[in-house]
Image (cartoon, rainbow, N blue to C red; front, side, top):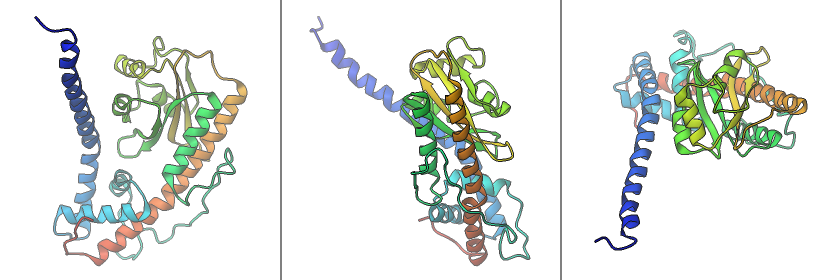
Length: 288
């Protein structure tokens, strides 16, 4: 006969093992989302600069990524989609015009490190949650290679939520609809709103979110380059006109800053990568 309390004690190791396996699965999925893009960029760089192996191409990406604090995934995506540099030119983008870093009107006292994308996206998320009074949310950026959205900043959301929505395509979620229509989208009740696929709905409800609101981050020309979303523990009646107006400012400022970062800091990283590639042509580079 089992003594009282033994059942709970026996279940604890099983629970820990299940949590470990789930964490491993999330890590594998995250790697699977990024690995093909980085491999593609490695192949392009190896051919372009006559590098001896794929590790040398990865080292090239890594050094430019670290120097300019640009995510490896972001840099690989731009390598794969940017026009090939003119072999007659020393610079990849010899005629580009540099613009000053735009200010954040919604937070004039905020002074992040110059060009620090993580700090700015954190400010965008914090301001959004403050405007709507929510404790959960995330920021996504546009994925140029796959034409979707990638989570880059989040707070208050479960690891399973971040794993499930790590990459979002063009359909099946409210943030995808907001990106497609380039407009704010409010979901008052996640359980009944038809915008979600059933798997997306289940993942959101499991994270404790019963309502959400998405705000596109847009450039001055109206292009959606990212998304910030707030999640609520209860259902939502809707947002006020003042809240929506304030969120428009957040979306415009965040989008304008992201566009500046893409055409300035990211291109600086590409220029550095190009210069390194030209100097190390035909040699082997080591990862740092």
